[in-house]
Length: 153
Image 1 (cartoon, helix red, strand yellow):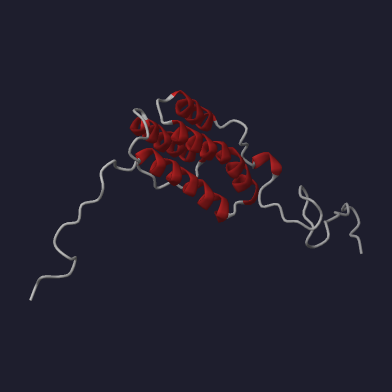
Image 2 (tube, one colour; image 1 turned 30 degrees about the vertical axis):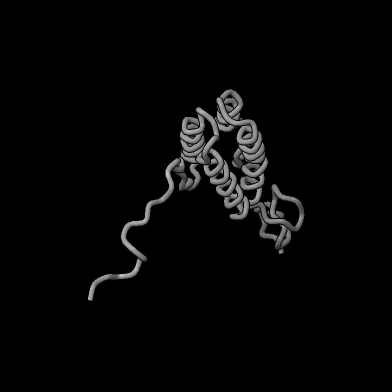
């Protein structure tokens, strides 16, 4: 029944929200979603890896990992699923591990620092949770003490 003088408001059926395909919930309006086309940090990182003095296999592996990142960020922004954030972190750690190996090249340490800085800056700029990354040490871990057990009586 319509009240005189008031226009009738049409509401979408329950479960169907405007701005999204029928039957799907869009968590954010399309205008507010982040665009991954303009991620200058990833472009700068790729340029650094390409121009650095690295062993060929290290450069190839690093570029492969860096080239996967734009798609993973796009998928993350589209779905906000943690599996994409985990994949980003895994690739970043894989590059850092590879750069820390012996014989990686003269610029391996510098590239590792650039990777940490660029991804950290990207996450800060986009308001994402910071990645817990640090360039790996070229030295092996040194155990302190004997067998690791307690010597207190």
